[in-house]
Length: 212
Image (tube, rainbow, N blue to C red; front, side, top):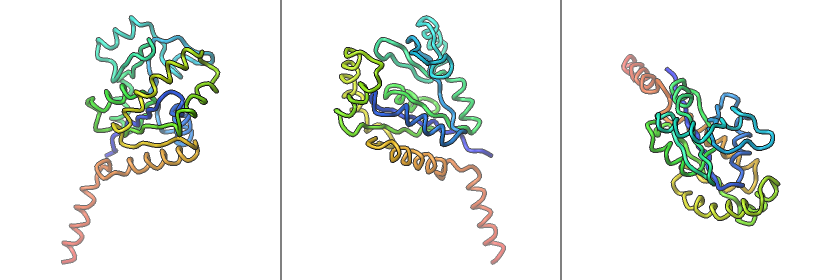
């Protein structure tokens, strides 16, 4: 018997570092899968369809939602984002862990889904709001208007921190990555996730009986 795969949710306000941390975790453990979201937004420079996102039209996205093909979905800054359920369910049943880089709305939907018992959720906080804005501006990808929108949304996103299993303050990437590794290793070893453990302990008790 093999354990069921974990659904590891990383959430944070934009600019707090969750995407960088997700990349580091996948480099640390190449068995860790990544849920490639579908989105209706246009690709950014350097993004490849099927790698960063599945880029689809709004009509196609809405058709997938209506057909029950999305594990979670939400509208963010006028664009739709969602996680196709087929590959995720196959990974869980096959004992393969999947990493999600999604917002609090998506995380809430995954936790409330039929796969909720397989979820481990982590919220990443910035060390300060000033640092958050500095990171957004340092990307050099967004206009002042977009950065202002993201900062305005950050307060609402941060208000959901208490819904998560773990909360980390990302004031140092190496330290935060090490903490995430520890969380994943521990969650993989939780008693209820270890297949055959009851049978093993039953065997130990039979050994005791044989010594009586």
